[in-house]
Length: 168
Image 1 (cartoon, rainbow, N blue to C red):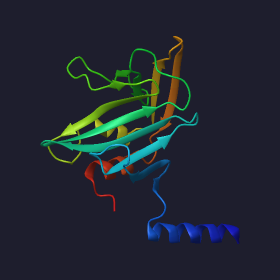
Image 2: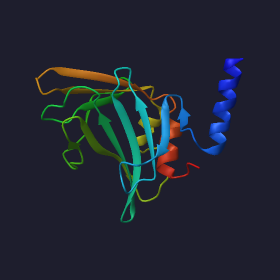
Image 3: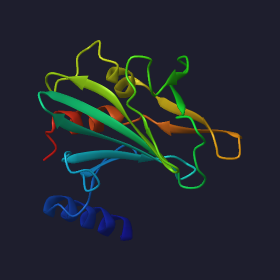
Image 4: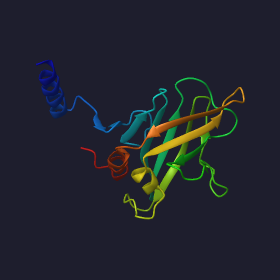
């Protein structure tokens, strides 16, 4: 009986807009931390770290940004590396573009840019949409190597909704 009541209450809350949209672990909410974004997709790892993604429109370009925020600890002097599934490790910054903004507990970087809000079949963001996990590795303030993994289950729907801007 309690299960039915909870499902009913959850359904009512969805209808009136009081509950965030969940996509298998990813949550899509109104963006309140950045002025140029409307929606934000968020997933939390088992250790409590948060991974967020949002889109901004800058001049004539659409850009998607990601942010890794640590629940405990601090990053060292370099941005983390990441890999999706078993790909090779990738740096957040490339020799061509320095987009990573490193702070003590969070790092923010651009993951995609396009002239339209459509994610192409060959765009690098497809790895985020189709992958199973993304793993980050960094050196903390004490020089220790840290690692955390996030599920990408449901990321495809959440990321496409955020990037396309068609949430509600």
